Length: 252
Image (cartoon, rainbow, N blue to C red; front, side, top):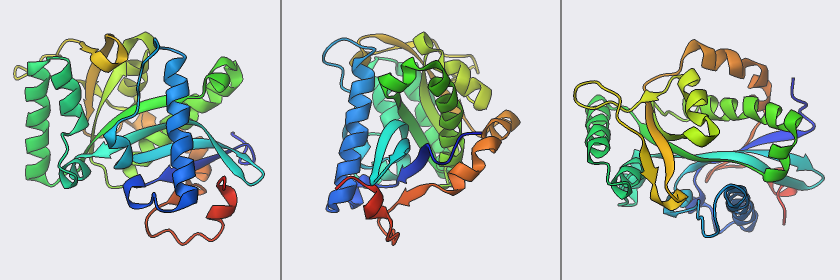
């Protein structure tokens, strides 16, 4: 069981709506900085794992809880298609496939989008899973954070009305295996055959498998059960948050 005194889960629900709050802006900057530092440890100079979607995504992060400070050490973002449409931006899953020149993938994603709209289901694109390099080097910390990530991923979608999920599994890090265990499958073509890997341009040609999930497998709930108390005890930072203790926990 993870010690509640060591880590704290934080959800930043919509940065775009809250950046006028100095404490929120500080935390948001720390999250982006952590992501850049994490990606720079694995990719060549110039890698840029942040984009416009960071402003409109949900950010679910694990923080090291220190005195008067929450220090982000792991997290991911997930961007609902409803927010992409609100801001008149291309849904990130479509952008990913388009930049790779993957026409069949674009068609498959558009088909999923059309069905979700017809059925009134919220669809999201999850991305940018990042761990601070310092904590990834520690084997015990890495093991703890793996279980916490699965909790962030499953609970972060279930708790915020997300019905279906798209993402890119990175074969080099075997993340496609993690997501398959949770309920994802490779994107399929019109003949219900798995589509090939794509090469992600902004990740310097990284091989990625675009994956889709309509629901989570029972395993997803089994593996997250030990962390339920931590999820329930998370700090949620939202536009209508009235938590008076929040500012005391964020870096001024």
